[in-house]
Length: 435
Image 1 (tube, one colour):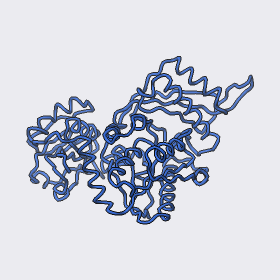
Image 2 (tube, rainbow, N blue to C red):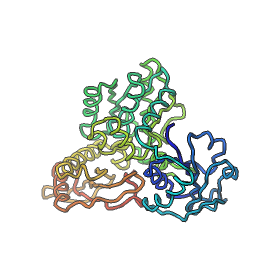
Image 3 (spheres, rainbow, N blue to C red):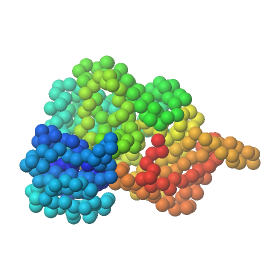
Image 4 (cartoon, rainbow, N blue to C red):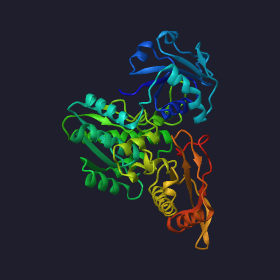
């Protein structure tokens, strides 16, 4: 690994990811590890230049206040205490909050003067490192990749193509939960333009049958994640030498799926939904990147702008936007209303300004009027948010005329819908997705 690294030890802080991002913004790589890492585990990490012990309100587990192992202080690395950590360090800083610029200014001296770290964290070095690690891990075997066509899987595909070429087998599964025209676009771009080895599987009926009557969001995610793996296993049996599964897991996925001092927000299909009898070894070269870093990686790899800055899309697809038990008519209402929203945002130039925007349809109805008669139909909820790293998000303030136009089209063109609402909830307290 070419990059110097500052290790953050999580002692219950809410600001670990903000601290890691601030250090990376300074040009130095940073990773977060649990508070009880051993000296042996710490020394096994490459190019560690210093340690920051980051304390916070979650520093009590099972009724006992936690601390790092005493031997960490004797491991030979410069150590700084931050936040509410009560560590015995030469350098101690108060709680940072989430002010990125303030954090950078606060840690700059420690990172560069005390730790003597060099500014060698950049995407070229990251890609070079990951290409080398992937080749070492995979050898002459093949990697099966779930290629949704979203940003994460597209960047992962480009990185793996650079590393192992034709030993990468891309599988696009149409689970019936894709956005309008999306599967067709994936086939066109990756098979016809990028010449990837792409297998297309239409598993719509299989997924929707499995999901029938399932209301719980976590259960839906686990079913979708589990079925994905089953489909890949079936495809892998048709191939020789496939021992690896490529996953577009990124850092917010890991954080939100829970750590020792952070409760789970929601499980991700590529973190919490994998079956215990998984037959593949995972290849996850993007797992330590934040979303904006994934995009920067895609640009460095030479992917088209429109692909790198494509709308984020969750692995479970529209399955987490058709709230509650999925029905085919409500699913179609989500798909059609989402297509209208995307079309109008593009016309207004908001597709390049707003980080993520989509519609969702909850599993309840309200009274309305259609064709001069009483109707009892669903609402469509619009969500549009801006974020840098997907850990926090703010709401896009859309002009009223545009909102009226979008609402009018949805009410006129989408069957069985009689209301359109706009979600004004930031993250936190809400998450970006509803499920």
